[in-house]
Amino acid sequence: MRALAIVLMIMSACWQMFAYQTEAIDSLAVSQSVEVVDTVAEITHPIDSVSEKAAGQSAPRKITPVDVDDNKPFKPSLHYYDKKGELLDEPVLFLSELDTIKSDNKPKMTYKALNSMNVWDPIMAIAGQKYGGIDVWADLSIHNRFFPVVELGVGIANSTPKEGNYTYKGKPSVYVKVGMNYNFFFNDTDDYQLFAGIRGGFSSFNYDIDNITINSSYWDESHNFSITDQHSTALYGEALLGIKVRIYKAFSMGWTVRYHHLFKCNDAKNSTPFYIPGFGNRNGKLGASFSLIYTLPLSRKAPRN
Image (cartoon, rainbow, N blue to C red; front, top):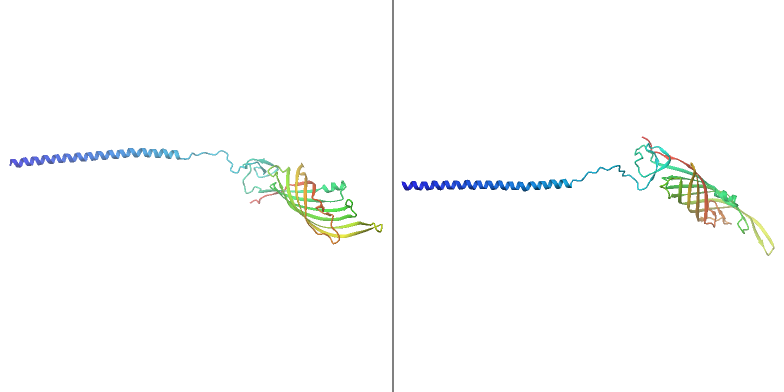
């Protein structure tokens, strides 16, 4: 019995020792787990802080523009209307479009019609030239850059060529020219123009050749006769360079130098024309014109709703 009691005491002591070690191990595991979790939390928190700082640094700064005009041109441009959309008496140069109303009721385009009379040939006639004509022309200003042109005139001649044995009489005949001018000063005021242009011309004309004198040295006599009712047509082109200057209100003056080229001229049965209306001397290449110009301030407005 005594031995059994000793064995039971030993077993009780071993059990107590086993229970104590188990509690110690559980406490250590819990403590280590808590420390690890806290450590992870401490590591995670700085990472979140860095992410928040990086996000704050990468956010774009907002800058509010001050008086920005996206339509601002590189060079000053002509404005034909005021802020109310009313047509100005004279165009104004501006570097911005902010002064112009953006509205469906605003006039869209401006055209100006120029009507002119060429007085060069009448002046030359006073100076003694025996052939020439007078013409009127009209062009349309499109944005002060392009100018479609139509010319209409009447030519006449009554000339005896130098050292010639005849008198050329061109009856009053109509000619027409069409073409285009380009204004190099299109971005400036329309008071001045430096332009280049081209023309295509056509004329249908009648003429007589009178006082044709043929001298015969053998018979020692001369014969006179005439060739009448001759008809011809001509097609020609021109390249020109000119200037226009406003002198008073809607009145201007212009000077033009022209280079002629004859494409085709149908000779009559018994003769060759000396003078071609609108072209000049058949053998000539250069011409000039001096014009008096009146400007009609036409404007085309968009339809109002």
